[in-house]
Image (cartoon, rainbow, N blue to C red; front, side):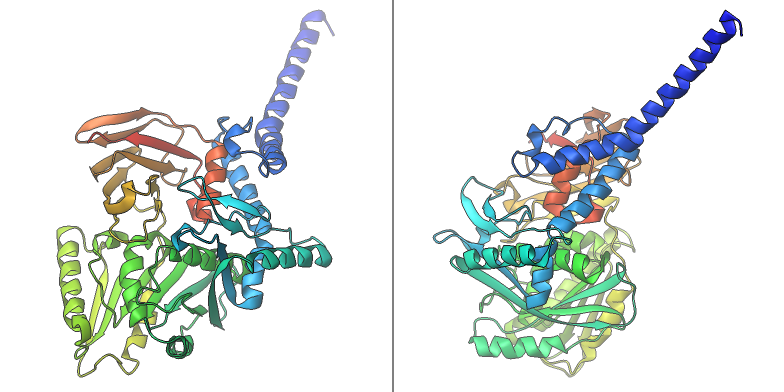
Length: 475
């Protein structure tokens, strides 16, 4: 072999080795290295302090890291999630002297005090974690330590009962959350209403679950802290009972209907559809129901608190909203049962089949988000508003087409758009327009920091976001 051919062979070998190195680093080593660093440091540091947290990732890496971190997150919460279903109760503790709506989000890292999302006070006890394959003695010790500590705190408990119907595969099960009636009455009456709710509806398939409200009060289903209980119930059902996060439905009767009126518009992104039974809406707005199919069932003669009149008015409002938008938006069904009062003699059971006809779209092309309740979620589909006070009476409308986002309405000074490759092509530049002006134009990077934070805060595999755009909205 002459010198020229030898150099050519060496050059080709160099190229091959280089390609193998690049493939190994990008496709194999890099995601695992990122996960190793996440596992090593996340218990002791904020993710923003990690070396890799803002390193740009390609689409393949981002998807691999998202998959691994989500599985790790579920594993780290498995003891807590399993304990809920072992005891059929969700327990949370909070510090004496602090409001119940400051119960901390649970992190699933270890037994430790947690910081509130809105201030720096210690507001709750994060439940423990242990991997599934830990030995029984260690797992039991973690459970015992946690419950010994939480029993010494102010404590809220949401019991639940459930039935499992049909033969849907684990991982693709439907879930029906059913809220009981009652209110500001003795606990025994609310207990009776809960027992009634346990067997009130029977879907053809899926997990049917009736929780018992933590407190006996008129607003028991829409107290500010209830968002944490709904999240824990849903997250644990996905992990332990194999629920499909896109097939979760919610209903409520009487006081449960009061709660459904309030929480469904504020937690639309959690559900595939909702059905309100014999409740009262208060002053909540239906505007946020843009992407959530919504049924109303009411007895014709249910005159207390003008429930029947309010139901008809809500039907008219949803008719108008659908008429000025699109037939596939503000989907609704108004059902006034003739001759019936507060008890509809189970005519409302037809709503279960109606709800089952829908599947959640976690990435709608247009979002209408109005906050006008004590429950003020920070996230809504692929949007977020960080400051709690800002969220108090916020009104945000954002639409997207291809890689362009249009902020149609926003009465708050800052807004975040969360992104993944199901929402936009992150290999290309994105544009955000507000008031006919471009307020963002450029590419965004995928980072493991964004992936981790979305898993930590959302706990929903559909809402894992690798990128985001933080916007300042001119006021």
